[in-house]
Length: 452
Image (tube, rainbow, N blue to C red):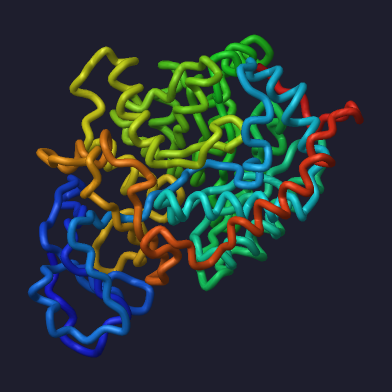
């Protein structure tokens, strides 16, 4: 807890809430708390009585609600909400090769923009304030981020089949758009994966990341079959390929990692870069995959952030659900009900997710100096009462639909469940008109071949 500011009016004061706070990295709660916001940052986390006379441009009475750092979606493909439910109950290779990649060859910038807008609306309503996106036409997505008010790390995906131009375009986007949207946009280089980007391209990407101070965001060891295929063809796991090409010696965000083997753990431990993994458990359950080895990664100090992947495979961009499923799936795969605890799940949803997207010093906790990315969660529903253990209530009882207010950089994007920056009915109507051309697969083309 910090004292209230002693000078000048605040931009926003939230009072009467129960605030999630971190003490030496451990999640705890402060009752009858107040959060003071000035110039887009948290100025103080204190008590409600302490700010009774503090002048403020805007006040929110949050009695009966929990205040949390905004959730972070560490790996997604926002425009893919346009393909939600298009291909169900299929193995991954068929899902990619027969459906998703042929349809993606029809993508237009208009569809990308509409999909991204719908995705941002969904995330705002679910309490997500930051997302890491890895996709195509990322200038369009960046424009949507600016409109929506969200925070994002964006990477323009590329394949070696595009030649040197693909890598160059990813770099050009990253350098040109980082710092946009009043600083809410950060950027990454975004090679697709080791099986679609060759070693030379991966090594060149590592050098560019080092030269320009950029993070690299890519898929690797997505599932066990990818790892097995990599061993058969190259004699190395995908993680070992990342090491060989220098990507573990720069800041790297690895999407999924369900195919990480025990032999990969010392390789990851030896990496000198800031390495993180994003886990999206709902999609793994749908594809019948193993899950991310969260416990093993945690034991070697690798942050594991929460993600949803794209809505085409996950069906939802609900990071709250990812938090719940991560806790439950880990208990199941470890055959240990004491792992993962509710407080550990909150840690992955906040501090570890912030670290995963390269913003560990900026977001992920309600603390002075952090960006004012805050969500308020209603605790008065019948499914959340009574509250014996608030961490357990948040992880196992509350839902994303209990989020009432979403704030980014001190700006209110949703208040009392009403979106303030995006018009969902208009977005849906415009997107629906584009769907017939989008889902046509008669051309027989696909953007890549899935190895799985």
